[in-house]
Amino acid sequence: MARAAILGRLTWQEGTVTAVREETSTARTIALNLPGWPGHLAGQHVDVRLTAEDGYSAQRSYSIASPPDDGRLELTVQRLPDGEVSSYLDDVLEVGYPLELRGPIGGWFVWDPASTAPVLLVAGGSGVVPLMAMIRTREAAGSKAPFRLVYSVRSPDTALYTEELAERQRRGDGLDVSYQYTRTTPPGWAAPPGRINAEVLASAGWPPDRHPAVFVCGPTPFVEAVANLLVNTGHDPGAIKTERFGPTGGQS
Amino acid sequence: MGIVSPGFHGRRQAGQKLPPGQYLVTDFPVLSAGPTPRVDTGSWELRIKTETGQVHSWDWTAFRALPSEDITVDIHCVTKWSKLQTGWQGVSLDTLLAGVDTGAGFALARSYGGYTTNLPLADLRDGQAWIAYEFDGKALAAEHGGPARLLVPHLYFWKSAKWVTGIDLMTKDMPGFWESLGYHNYGDPWREQRYWGD
Amino acid sequence: MSHLDGNMLGGELGELFTMDVTMAVAQCASCGTPGMIAQTMVYADAPGMIARCPSCGEIMLRLARGPDRAWLDLRGVTYLQLPMPAEP
Image (cartoon, chains in turn purple, red, yellow):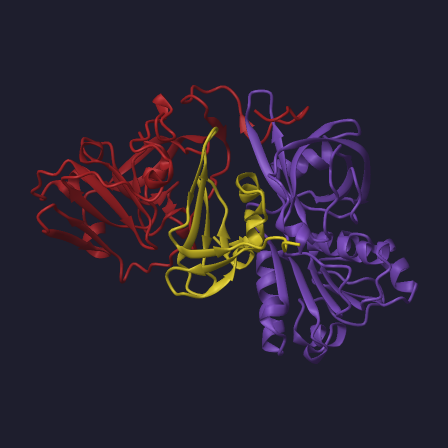
């Protein structure tokens, strides 16, 4: 907790894009170098600010996708239709471009690698990004805390990090990944498409008596529905941490 | 100013004559300090209260029976977006104030949900202000202030209180929600009066 | 308009304070319920940011930013308990 207590004042800093990587047809990962970046905690986010030549500016928050590292971080940005910031980040920004950001932000929606409690991660769409940072941090820290990810997506081609998640699950070192497809399922998928419900969370998640730490992230309606389901099935509301991506402050 | 992001333009249109520091947008941003009040017209009420405590009130039926007009105006938000030639339907404050006996110099608009904003009573008169219930030919959506909002386009749009339910006429000025937290007491976009001291 | 989590105040508050105020415990002045600022309901659009009590919905914190000033209204909070590193 000492690190969360004294941070120094946050200010806007300039990073440089060092790499871009297409994740899906509508999302890409942007790697940034930022001198003096102190590293971050898994689950934290940054605020990104874009400024046009005439001074017009727009600002959005993005979760950090990468595990803690000095001097560098990665963001995964989902392009939203009409998204003035996401369309710039995904279509215009190139290697070598500057990007102004403020962070790392948020000591609450954070997973501590020293913790051994089971962890339930529930992701809706691009809400998987901070949860992926937790999964990557778990490996980097050598943690054996059991992790279960329930990842709700519209269709297989909109899911992020699928190969990496499959590879991590194959290692058999305590990460389980379950998908919930809400619109289109992959060929041969046994279940029909549909939203997460109590049965899915019960079979793919942890029972309440394991007292998992729970992180739910995604669009606001998704987060609220899932949080309600979890509480109604007996999970301790105090153990559930949520990060809503909304029309502002979230990804756009 | 932040570092310039090469190639970033945002969702704006160029050209038009705007108040200083404003940018034209094509959408209609929604700004709010709280959850959207859900007010059904069956229980809606507009109350104008004078400095002597006299109350004039209209329920939805009475309000909609008043003469109303088509309004086409430019609107300017303190967060720097502007929309030109927006179309509304509403009742002029001149109509509502016609039967109100008052010597007050100031007004405080009150909204369902607790929001308030203040302005000189003179700025509500003489064709400068309306209670609007339609936008762009359709009933005003709740997220934009429906069933009815105050519309005072010559001032920054935070003065156009959404979900308006009352106007208090007062002899003393009383800063409203944003005016008490750094935003300019009057708010003329053409003099760029955004914050205290501007 | 739905809300965000209080964690989203961290960027703005982080420019005003040297510690992470989202991790502070705050008591709601309206209903007396204590909780972390990170758990408040945040309405994050300008003209300012508003944090509401997750128990009673009343406003706990308001923050507005100008180009060279910030305004912070904490009347909705009776106290902030801020985590500090333990003294050796």
